[in-house]
Amino acid sequence: MGFFDFLTEEIAIDLGTANTLIIHNDKVVVDSPSIVAIDRTSNKIIAVGQEANQMQGKTHENIKTIRPLKDGVIADFNASEQMISMFIRNIPSLKKRFFTPSLRMVICIPSGITEVEMRAVRESAERVNGKEVYLIHEPMAAAIGIGIDIMQPKGNMIIDIGGGTTEIAVIALSGIVCDKSVKIAGDVFTNDIIYYMRTQHNLYIGDRTAERVKIAIGSATEELENPPDDMSVQGRDLLTGKPKEIMISYREIHKALDKSIIRIEDSVMETLAQTPPELAADIYNTGVYLAGGGSMLRGLDKRLSQKTELPIFIAEDPLRAVVRGTGTALKNIERYKSVLVK
Image 1 (cartoon, rainbow, N blue to C red):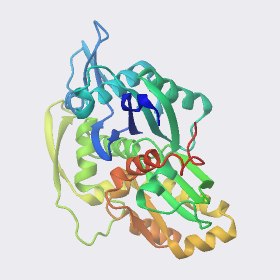
Image 2 (cartoon, one colour):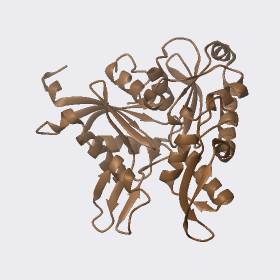
Image 3 (tube, rainbow, N blue to C red):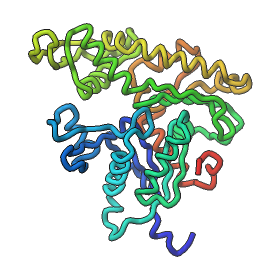
Image 4 (cartoon, rainbow, N blue to C red):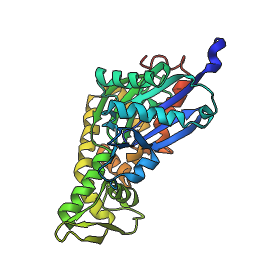
């Protein structure tokens, strides 16, 4: 710890396809959709996060909204860099500073990420004044966030269903023993709902409406103990071109999402099949942990439990499990040195 430490701030970032969360001083200071709105004529960013999300699907030709991250990795380098920098500038305690402090950062990345994609994340961080940049794999961060002691010689299985990817990993001795990263998660669920509405009801709906339907009445099984009420959905009739409204139930959404959920189930079974026998015995005793926004889909835990015949536990506040773990790793960098990728 040197004299210039007061010039350095520590932040933990969960760069998600759907939401970006930032922890500073042990508090979640940014929790915003990963969306930017760009003015096409000047190429300047006019809004990020919640404000840009409100514009999604409602813009005219001079404004476009983009999601700079796709499948958990940076797809649009320039937009993602500006988005990260605007989020960091909006951190309340950094706003008061006269100058931009240098940053020590821990950033969360999917486990199936390539070297090139990793470099893109690191370079983005360095451009926003990141002096020390560490990366941590998502399932590992989720495990720390759930409160599992990852240093133990004991197997734990984590399924993290985010916006762009589903990360399935078996963790022991602070390392990932076997893992699978599948590009089926929240975004695919949303697209499934849009496709179902088009093919079954001739109703064309946008991303935001589909997202609302997914949160309000999304379900992974047909039989729910306390089912949500039917929901009215408005969109454009594909036959007449007029705006129209229909009522849909959670059972229909289950039909829409079924194929994608089957693929997640298959990936979980594949990962279990690759697990060494001693760790499989541990998992049989401890069960499987679910994290990420996708784990909040009604009945998903029950369905996975039937498929794997293992107890399934959903993390408390699953949306923030990953960023909490990233924050813990940031606070105890020495302890988690072996887990972080420098």
